[in-house]
Image (cartoon, rainbow, N blue to C red; front, side, top):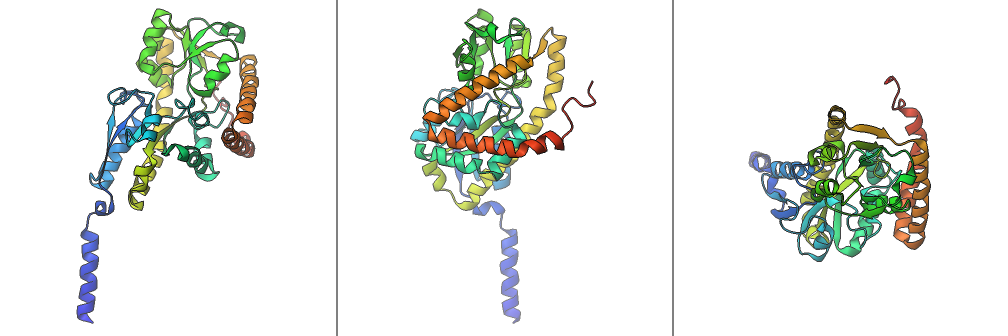
Length: 352
């Protein structure tokens, strides 16, 4: 009995002493990003996740972030992961919507789910299962790994008071929001963030949307355009993902998979908390620099909503997967609406 007890104690002590990282696979991935890591609350989430993965795994899971353009084009994460040219990458979901249209809904849905609602839908109302279903034929395993607050509606050189002003305007936009804006006669183009300042300054663009005030400030848009339109109707949440080649993902052990997915879940909280913490101060600085904050009136927003409904109906009729995902989002949005309306104080209560 004493010998048996001693053996049990020895085994237990060895198990306790063994580093937790011993059960993790040794992972060495380069992770090209679509955004520079210096872009606060947009490009810094994946580096934070990578640091946490190294810390928890004792260095066994090492995801080395790569700046945009250093390994692949900034907006080409999806196709390079799909083909196996790279094992993993990090991007806003939607740049690939020409190849996989439904991806745009997971990146940002106009008049759709805000960040807290989006993660609720993803984790508890079937969104994540639909995401995996949509990307499996492309041999991509996407993991939600950073959701942030609404984008602004755009930077302009004149105040926008009517949708009639959009006709003929050269404007940068991404995803389905850009298709909706084109309904009003905008000439919509897609350019990466690093090219937008010069395009605005030289008149290649008349206006642009890109990201949060924090990010827009770092890109210097307030120096070349003085009207900042809000709210971000086209992106109530902005959602970024770790894209992993499905063949490579399937080689990992369950514990390593769980570590990566759980750390990305923590990354979602990190990203939205950081985003919410910083925007108020940035808007104040914009005003001090002569920027006019413009809140779109109801007529403009209603026009955008009507155009959104048209585009969504058209897309749903043409793409069964689009219809499936959008219907799921709208069903949850409707179910959640009473709680959203009654459970929280009105946004402006006590602020006036």
